[in-house]
Image 1 (cartoon, rainbow, N blue to C red):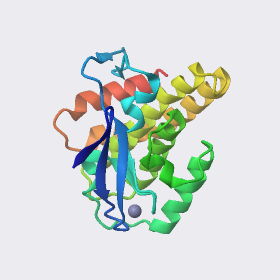
Image 2 (image 1 turned 90 degrees about the horizontal axis):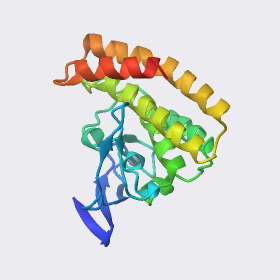
Image 3 (image 1 turned 120 degrees about the horizontal axis):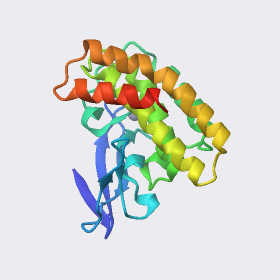
Image 4 (image 1 turned 90 degrees about the vertical axis):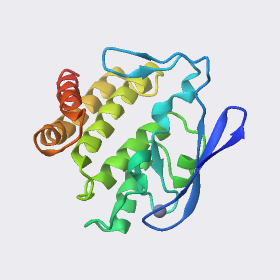
Length: 205
Ligand SMILES: [Zn+2]
């Protein structure tokens, strides 16, 4: 359940299904007068301040064990084949590359780098969620959104254009098989159209 923290933020309380820790996920509320528009990549572009970008908050991350997932999948976790400690270490190593050393930062208002790192962690955790019918699609979506945010980081001057294009190229190579597998084997009502679109768009990055 979400409770309002300030005039423009809410906190969603969660119990981590992996380590049972209770934590809050704080995020901005989309202002009523904010007009979302979709660009040619199907990306929702907010007219509000950049730090309110909803893309930075769609993945929830447990500040204790690093378990990460999109909110609709978060509570559905079933014991997976992967070792939770190994996943935590992999997530910690990944977020360090974004200049983040404390998982608690994901529960507070986020900057662009937290948004980017949250998708990297979610992709790590989705890998072993064989119980989830749309696992491959989610993994592909994590990478696809990371590609968007790499563009933002380049525009903000956080990374060079050359580095951004190299990161996007490698991310595209990584997620293309996920999207292909998702299209071939996963059942999700509106998904075939999305998978094809995402695969095409990722391939053209
Ligand atoms: Zn946890």
